[in-house]
Image 1 (tube, rainbow, N blue to C red):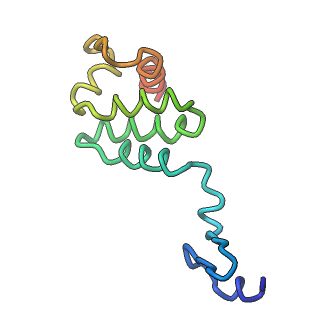
Image 2: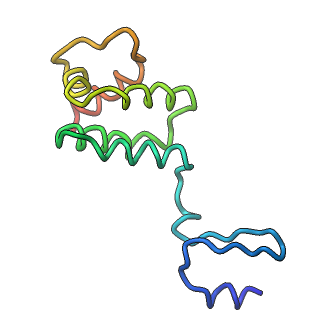
Length: 115
């Protein structure tokens, strides 16, 4: 019953096996990011360099929720690169290599230039 659910408080995940329904905490329900986007957000914020943590993490917070599936794949390829290189590309110190998506890199450069 609803009263039983309310008494359970803020348990992050409750499985109700009897009817096969899963109930999630308010925090999870309000999360606008799916599992893949949350993983990318985490990877964006846990970088090796402070500068890239700030720039890439901020970019991810602002844009991940609106990126298409194709853009997400391309963004993930950028995250696979090493931090010093990413930093040089998004700050226009070095040209963007051909194997990375120009649209995502341009979005990241615009974010870096404006923040």
